[in-house]
Length: 247
Length: 82
Image 1 (tube, one colour):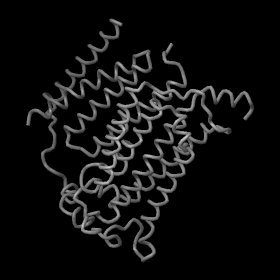
Image 2 (image 1 turned 60 degrees about the horizontal axis):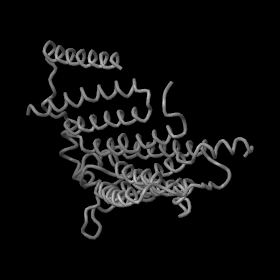
Image 3 (image 1 turned 90 degrees about the vertical axis):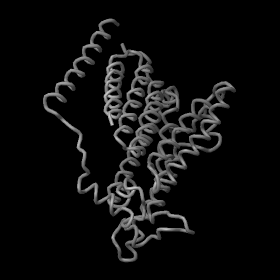
Image 4 (image 1 turned 120 degrees about the vertical axis):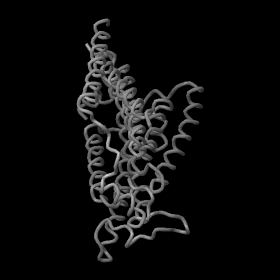
């Protein structure tokens, strides 16, 4: 234990000394000016994409195709995880007792708060920092809270299974694909934003396709990570029984 | 502003300590907690460098999802490293 602290102290002092040496001898300074590319985005994002949020505009408009493929990669990863952790018979767990009443009440309040914030992050993604991915991952945390507190069985009895969640994720991904492909029918490029989608709906700024991408990405990421939480929380004994029983 | 470099320096140093503790810890659950601490330091760092979009994704994924996933995975194996 003392050796561990000694090593930690040495590492800390060495890194402090190195950073001091680099700053004093080489005189490394943070840049004070904005690069031309940054200036372009700051000046033109609002005309090009009708969104005041440059990051969302870059992610879903300027570099939209990259993000769609990235979403597909994550989808394949989640499907792969489901494939190796699948179980042939219906998961039936004996324990239905979760944690105590205090934890359940606290979790109920926390889950509501997290869900509200997740929706706000996702649906305001084209106006404020955030977007579909952060909102969806925040939403998936609710599933990871519910599983240990209320038990997996209570979720499965309500019909929330990882297969259904992956199916929901597939539907949301299809919707993202449709939003990207629809402009092609009018002879425009794929992932076109402002030339095809309206910037306002009923007087509210939705920044064209950005709002739809954010919303469907939110659904896709939330259901995908919730599916991961569900299939990882199936107890290991069930897999061992399956292996012994020969499937 | 002198505050921002100081916040960045402290967050970096704390994250270094958390990383060392997480690597050398034999109790895997404690290692997850140290790893989450490192993630919080990085979130502070990103916020000090004015990247709120990254902070949101980073906090949700690395403190929330990643830690929860690793805890689920540890429940399938043993808690202590030999």
